[in-house]
Image (tube, rainbow, N blue to C red):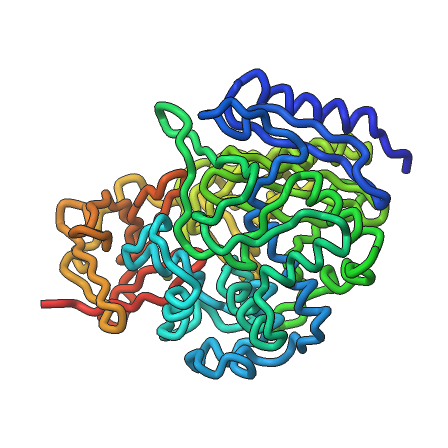
Amino acid sequence: MTLDWVAAAGRAQEIAANWQREAGPGGAVVLFDRDGVREAFAGGLASIEHGLPFAPTTPNRFASISKHVLAVALLRAGLPLEAPLGRWLPELPAPLAEVELGRALDMTGGLPDMMEAFWQQGVPFTATLDAEEIFALARCFPALSATPGTEMAYSNTGWRLGQRILEKVTGKPYAEIVAALSGELGLGLRLPYDGAEILPGLATGYWRSAENWRRGHYGLHFSASGGIAGSAADLAGWLSALLAGRGPLAGMLEKLTAPRRFADGRESVYRLGLVCNRLGSSDVVGHGGSLPGYRNHFLTAPAHGVGVVVLTNREEEALWPALTVLAALLGEELPAIGNAPSGLFATEDGPFWAELAPDSISFMGGFERLVADGEGGLRSLPAYLDIRLRQEGNDVLSGLIGGVQRSLRRVPTDTLLDPQLVGRWREPRFGTEIEVRANGTALMPWPSGGTVSRLTPLPNGRALADLPHGPWRSRPCLWLDGEGGLRVSGHRARILQMQRAG
């Protein structure tokens, strides 16, 4: 294959120029190969307030791109992936302690996500919580979201626990480990532990409200799940070394992308902090990341030793821009945009629902872009979640979502709220309360007395709440479990089990 650096650079320059013309927040697009950075472009502002331009060397938050760095550190430390988390963290409750480290990292462990679990209890993502306060929540989890090995559902919890294990085994703060790994390669990766820590030159994160750009804010302790900061040039340098197997990354790409399997033996596209996919005839490996005000993605084609980084301080999709640059470089056709039936769909029972647009799907709140699979069906371009669906008319879609067979049926627009949902509900372990009202609203947990959410009824004793969280949107499903209880579920956390109060 002949690589077309000119075409890829042209596309990258176009992306940067669009940010520049808008005169708002921006980002950088960096092309690299096994030898290092080949081309770098940037546009827009790192700080709107101070009019500072965004450059390829501007530090930015990597968000979940950080994950595979911890996997490298765990592999270098020789920790056995098949060992249960309780081997190192015996204070975890039994369901979590029995999950294998490898499943905690490849998202098949059923571990409830800390942030979504906090959201469901009314704790906003802006709340300042340190590592011990967050770990205390994990020690109270009464159950897993799914049986380990049966489903790939995105969760940051395994990575937070993995960091804790690494620090316990090595006796070193993870920030020191990151700095040492980065330093061996002459790069500037850093791990701040909270948003108040000063990082010289760090780009301010922004998200677009209905009126204007607003600064992003994240209060939870930064961890290995998404806390690393560095420039687009730093990230490209790291990934170049990963492709080449240089220095501390020798042999790591093969280990990070080695097949990870469900309990029944099928392969998952999600590996150790990396997602494996295909673009035309080329195998590609990448990962994305999002924090309030930051959105990033990188993609590599390991067989050709090349890749692209898109790092931004604006809360907008970065996967598709990265894909267009890589496709231009490889001379591959972009996948055809999907043509899914629009609307709200749900399974026959349980908390599983999806909202579709022609080119995208939100499965229980997890967004993925949809493309044609070439065989009359639809598939995701997995930022994280692998989805493969076939239409059965306009009202039913069936297929694999995160490795699980699901059948989604269109929700009738005249669906009414099930009266059995109405009442006051309380979770005894955490003290969380929800009041479902006959007028189709719910008083949801929130500081200072709760917040009212309009409910969207689903068939068979279910309803969706809708809660804005700055640039993010939480839509937990409230559902009657058939045993007299009410459950609260999202894609990332499904453990709140409530009982009628009063």
